[in-house]
Image 1: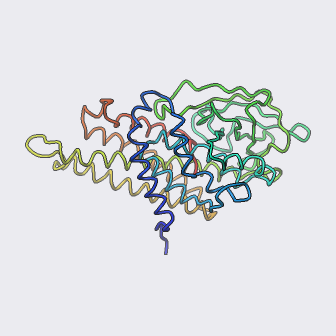
Image 2 (image 1 turned 135 degrees about the horizontal axis):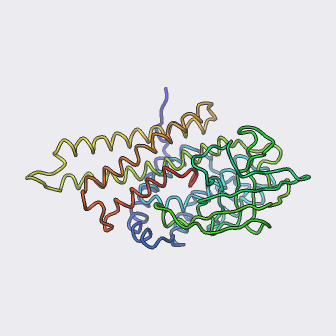
Length: 370
């Protein structure tokens, strides 16, 4: 029997983070979006929950909890239900940590993981997105060429969350002599590496408060030890699927927030002598929004569960979940705005912000990972 019933621990985490999202993240979301900056106290508040440190093995100073894609999907949805921008900022360093736990050598784990187990937030960026339209791991334009016992990296990466603050980047690059996913590796690149240039992105329509960076790699020389996983390398497909599911989970939280916001308004707003929620067009719209939220959640959870158990169907489930969420999240955010009519475009209300954030979440690959 297939079941996605949450464990007692997962239920407690979900309820706790939903409360945090509603009481701490949501009330300040609009002000942060208007300012276009992410306050340090937001990152610290999320860090204090130990969401990243909890998954780090005790040997490296962490909580020693099991890394669960399902749990991470639940976490990201709960945080996304308060504010997508703050959710991404809080959880972005987890991409670097997850990749280290999954693929890192003992030496790499010992060098980097303890930094993420302390009380002070640490920024590190996953450099996944490139300038070309679309994304496929095997089509990376950033290259990694052998040079003696080391590597030389050339290319450009875009829209790296918290990249302005990161002291290390995990850069995906393709061996030009290789073929397919097996030719894609990840490299730990320190910020001060010769040939690495870090610049701030000009901004994006959504997730505005999340600082994003562009990095240019011009003949960046790295030792052999910089390749994540050493000679074994990484499973690039798994890393990309984690990013796809993570972004989808945040989008599900945003859609749930938009639906919950529109429902009471439809019951209270009177037009032509009765609440607009009694109009079939509005009632059916709200019903569809609720149905799609549930459908997206199950698809994301299924993909996360398959990935967690290394099921061969995880890649297909991840792509299907991502595609479905990309199409439905925009519609739900737009329908919520339409229910409010012209008021939906007024910046006193969060609806236009949610629509912008939904669009950005659904066109970016990799702002967060499960």
